[in-house]
Length: 227
Image (tube, rainbow, N blue to C red; front, side):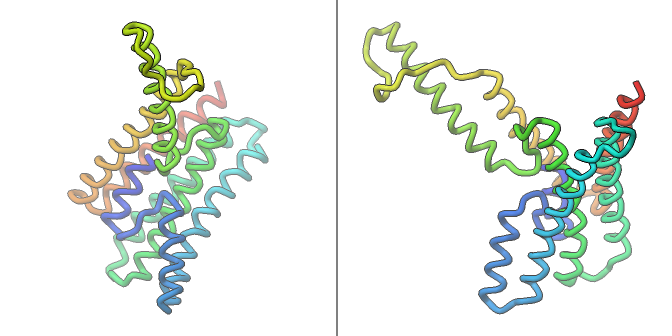
């Protein structure tokens, strides 16, 4: 869902909203060039992402809905759904293409993405991040290097020609980890492609697809809590 919201948000409001790095870079650039209103807007995007992550973590840590983790997840997902719906409603009534108006809309998506990222991070034990791919692609590079050395070792055993790079033993990497990373990257790409396609054709209504998907997850989490 991070890929869908990120790409559709860019088509609709001209901002990438699922990661903070670009907005921090924009903040520094705007401040350096004296565009202080734009710099403050960029800062607000960073703070909204932080706020979303903070709210999700408080909900999960507190477990104030009967002490059930599933209910906490359901509440966090319901809030994310509300933010996506609020973005959609605001985008329909806002005719202005002024950059600051677009930033206000983007802030809602940033909050939703911060909430989702913290939620999945907690759910996966800080193993999975769903709103950006920098770490995933880095880990894929690391795992690919391990597999490369391992395959060269196996080929060396067959050909009896030393092909292993370096003296360190080439051990078999963990296939499930590589598969998980590849699945996350492929899913993000698929979501981003779908988000851009829907936003180009359905405009602001595209975000209703994301809201419906998150709402379905909230319902599932809520039902799991009662099971």
